[in-house]
Image 1 (cartoon, rainbow over the protein chains, first blue to last red):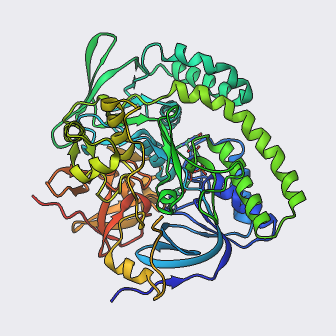
Image 2: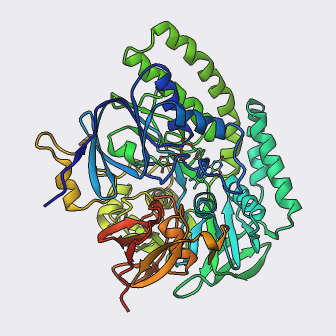
Image 3: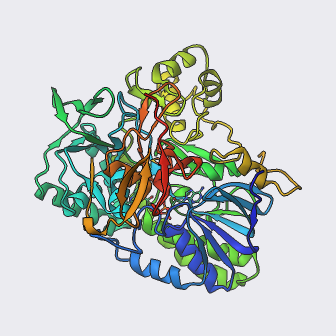
Length: 467
Length: 92
Ligand SMILES: Cc1cc2nc3c(=O)[nH]c(=O)nc-3n(C[C@H](O)[C@@H](O)[C@H](O)COP(=O)(O)OP(=O)(O)OC[C@H]3O[C@@H](n4cnc5c(N)ncnc54)[C@H](O)[C@@H]3O)c2cc1C
Ligand code: FES
């Protein structure tokens, strides 16, 4: 017998995600007297950037982090930890906690599901002993664990440098950083440098970070290409080319990274529209300035909509909550206008600085140029070569490749392969021919058991959207 | 492959993995605990390939294990609890 769904008391606003965006939205919505429930799948508040902030251990957080977390804990919002949201049924959200299916009715939904690391595809990347760089950071901040043996960090992006520094400070020094930023990338990004005046603090923190890594004297191999993980049953090291020479580093832990992209799976499964952004080479959710999604009753805050960083996530969280308060009659049009104008202005100014960061850290380890043997779809074990064959046979979009190869049909439901797939399509066919429309996603947004599915139905309606 | 920064004396919880007992720190995730005890692979693919926790944030589903009788539980999103029983279901 399926366990019956727990039905939570209805609330005004349901917020999905307890990172900076979700916490800021909750605080603001509470200020206007709205009832707020925050659902988050992690064991504790903080999202990515503030992971572990409620029991900080040997990690330094941004100055605004602790005040935000404290205000959130005192704002009177209900926080449900370990709550994985997977469907929306009319005004009701369906989520799971420890295998139990729960339902929550809310008048408005703010999606603040944040970001995830851009999928990396190279030979050997699925072996035990290969993790993402963000994984090492999560292990440090969330579980107070660090690598114990020989380990390397490889790839590109600010998170890689930041994690290297945090690990060094925690007493775990990487053997090397294998930096995949291509030659001349810095120079070609400089045309966006004037935008950095919009956010001098961002520029400064980058410069400081680089200086501190240099001071720590971690060997750095620059402009690395042809990465492959060595080992048969588990990682034994990393091979690559740098400055015209072949290198091999023995290691039992290899951490890969190629930037971050929106974690927008849930928004897409709720039917919210998104569009391809050629500059960031990922999708961005389509929203109004007030961060309303294309589906009525849904707002999108923080990196879930487009990557703009933790501080900006707090601004868009506030924007979303103000707009919801206005919509639900808890804020007058005048008060709304006055609250929103400075937020929009600050956001606009700081976003200009992102363009330099986006150009500098454009992807380097995507499947586009990967060896044919590398697995593009981890779940269904589909190698890049099979994707290329499907394209050669006429596929021009993700849906056709998916139908031909089963790519994206496993438990992660395409989270780990959709962008890889698009990068191969664009490489093989050119951007003009590639069909960038996303694979259709039906709720549930995560794999569930039949019992959970049965329990999610209360007799009327159906689970999820067909949009 | 991993070590804890916490005092070993504080690892006062016990979890069972494939019938053997291992110490665990309050607050760490099941995935962190498995990796700390070098219990990888943590699962196999249908074709028998070894896999282990990869993203540690809930996005990749590589860390799924059988936990207290529930299948496909994401170990990276689950904090350890005293007495937890975990099965990796590895075939020889
Ligand atoms: C692994 C990783 C580490 C990062 N570390 C840093 C860092 O140290 N410094 C930095 O400046 N930036 C970091 N970033 C970038 C990050 O995107 C930050 O800009 C910031 O955390 C974004 O805030 P947010 O509130 O938008 O989302 P997040 O902080 O990502 O919070 C989103 C929350 O929603 C939860 N969630 C997602 N889907 C669901 C669902 N279906 N049901 C329930 N809950 C869900 C997530 O688990 C998470 O807790 C990191 C990104 C990643 C992927
Ligand atoms: S390790 Fe990726 S989902 Fe758990």
